[in-house]
Length: 404
Length: 106
View 1 (cartoon, each protein chain N blue to C red):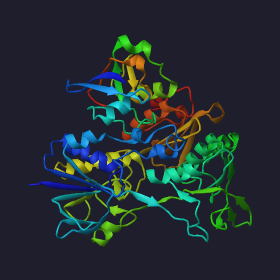
View 2 (view 1 turned 180 degrees about the vertical axis):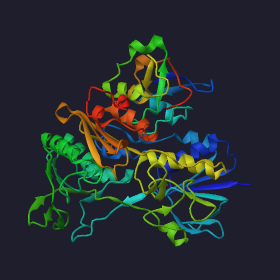
View 3 (view 1 turned 45 degrees about the vertical axis):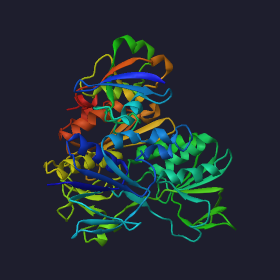
């Protein structure tokens, strides 16, 4: 009999698990423990409309407080779970309170990878992960403020676009030879670099930061080639690391994330995990992955909730991602590793195009820029393991769903 | 405030007082209206906040943009009165709006 389920982590996954557990009829004690003080909220707007001030904090909430009351969810927010005793099935909180569980769900998320060079801890150096990170950045915002962004990935570029829209002078320093190099094709990198430059963002690639300097706060960023970039504000977006400490010290198997199976079960039969913190099998792509995405957090949490209630449901989804930069929407579906051919559909100059990744005739992934039709069609085709006709595929007048 | 009446997939009726300026999706999600999944949270990236707008209200809404059109093509049972609720802004003019949530999302 499962009478108590604890969820640690009040992000996308934690919020979704609550929803599914109650909708699927779990009537027992349900406790959500989260180290952030806010009710569960969505993170994607933090680098976009929330950062710009266009969106208020209450609009970030997944649910109003009344929802949690109505569904009898005990909220323990603003407090950290400091110890997990898997043998005793007990979690200890920072204030000493001990909570016993029948089943536990870990939705620990990921934390920002820290810059370690000299000067990295100077005041004025910021990371953007949670709601509380935003206000200190906004406090330094003003037109003409010089913002240096370290890292040309999703967070860095979305933040760059937002800062530029506010009127800041923005420089992005990327270590690799192109922006978003780990997630998109060179053609898509080029397109976005062009868009950023057109809006006045200074994008510098092949540039490694070696130290940050300043008297009492950061004043400049110095790179390996000796160049120096004046900064009123530095924002670091150099990747994320799965949060696993609670799990690993409790003896759960961890390897770039908490290791779970397709049912979201960890190496302990009473403990499940979902979201950014997991290393999980992708059934569609036949290998283990760790994904940082809203979609994965949502879907794994749903799957975990079913399995927490002993309903065997496997997590078998095609992952998808998106990014908004200026008025561009990048939509990505699938995983592009192991492809042997890229096919371009449409013309980047038209500001609407997509890049398809094929292995033989099988569609593995699509990166769609301002092209929701190709993206939506690809979601279905990739899930179905559809075999495409590469000749038709390259003709943008033929719809993607008809390119078979 | 604008009163919005949602009909949920099971036939349940939910009346919500939504503040002007938020989206129809946000009003549904914060109040836990069944069937409005809204996975991407309003980025027009997932098509899981698909709803049917009562035909008599359609003219009062801003028309769909191209991104939304593309998304809706692959939504579950799209109709002429289909909208992604994240793309509909609540205005005072929409007081009394009738919305039906599809049986499923995708």
